[in-house]
Amino acid sequence: MRFKWTIRLLPLVGPVILYILWATAVSAKWVSAALLPSPLTTIVYTGHVFVSGAIWGDLWSTVQRTLYAFACASLVGVPLGVLLGSSPPIYKSVEFLIDFFRSTPSSAMIPLFMLIFGITDINKIAIAAFSAVLVIIFNSAYGVMNAKKTRVMAAKTMGVSRFHIFKDVLLMESLLQTFIGLRTGISLALVIVIVAEMFIGSESGLGHRIIDAQQVFNIKDMYSSILITGALGYVMNLIFMFVENRLIHWGGKV
Amino acid sequence: MSNINIHAPTSSPTSSLASNPLTSPRKTHVLIDNLNKSFSGLPLYIDFNLKISRGDIVSIFGPNGCGKSTLINMIAGLTEIDTGQILFDGKTLTETKIGYVFQNYRDALFPWMNAWSNIAYPLKRSGMSASQVKDRVEALIDLFEIKFNLKQYPYELSGGQQQTISIMRALATDPEVLFLDEPFSALDFEMTLFIREKLQEANLKTGVTMLIVSHDLEDAVFLADKILLLTRRPTRIAAMLDFDLERPRKAESVSDPKFIKVKAKALEIFQNEMRA
Image 1 (cartoon, rainbow over the protein chains, first blue to last red):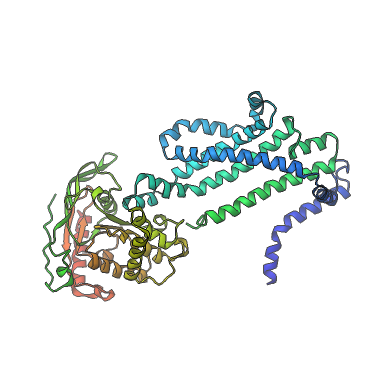
Image 2 (tube, rainbow over the protein chains, first blue to last red):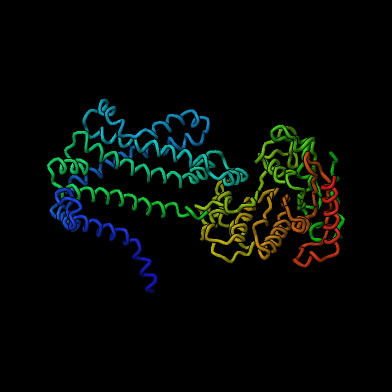
């Protein structure tokens, strides 16, 4: 039993080490207290912004923008990716474009999007959706292209129609890879939303809060906003893993 | 090249196989006529001809790379042929119901469906009503004496159970021809015995013609009415041996003098081919 408990506590080792390092850095004055508040101060402050409600507006803005961007990206990306994947010649003809823009940091496109959309909320959602859609297309397409040929052949010998082979076999086969795309996509969307909130005139959002706190030297608020942004990304990933394990129960088992 | 004679039953007329109304006429069921197939310029089959009688279990055995699996894949329509004709009782493949059991059951079953739904899938897609599907699956469960829980997903089952599900799925639509590509190669001996028994039962009950690719001579001989021995590529028929040991054949049948004789004969032909 004791052995099991120790194993369960292992994931806490990293955070504890970080906490100690951080606390030591502050108390030993390795770093000026003006630049880094103690971890306890930061955590207490973080609790305070939740209780006082100061954070909710910004948190909700960021979540909303990320979800909008992610929804747009998946609604376009998954069907398009599956379509491209089921026709390798078509995929080959657009492969370069997808790979090129997938390799271009989306933040580099922010000025271009500002020209098109102006300094609006739509702009932030559009650029985040753009950064997510490519990785979603890419993964869905490869999910279909790399589907196990044996299952397709099995359905073929059953005399199943091409439409049903696509719907019942290829689409199901591609789900695992599609989910990898969706999970990466939502992380990318969050990254771009935060960047956009920092640099495209924004009235709300965690990115806006971080840059504002830095400008007025509200150090505690800056660190706590960074912590909250990190936690948000982590929780979104956790939710995704949970849904994925439920939906694609066979993943990693075949 | 050589045409294979239509098989006349040489076993005692009282054997259950000979009295089966489906199999007794011994009509040609699968006809391969002037088949040609090459891979990247290298001919594999040149003007290949073969006739398989209805209800026969035919084992295909030959040296590595002679295209055993390619042969059944061409008949099953999974590999395209270059020229020639393959007919089932005069019909084309699209007019014929077939079943196919793959060597790798893990890659062939649908892991997103439980075992029951895997078996039912081809039935549902053939347009049967839900109650008809249920009856048919129940009949297969009886035939295979399934004791384990079919609500489980394939990855929760043992290898032998998975291959059993694959075979049930392939037999679900009551196919005319059942193809099996090395169905025993990933199974332990106990499961091999079980599946051998069930395949014989299915053959007796439904008269389904079976084509089995095997790389194990004992497996190849055990189930077969005919053993098709192939040469090295370009592939020809080295021999088509008859094996008329009574059915059902049991595990002990491998010590039957008839079994030993046919296996020795097959081995001799195989070794001659390897030397040639």
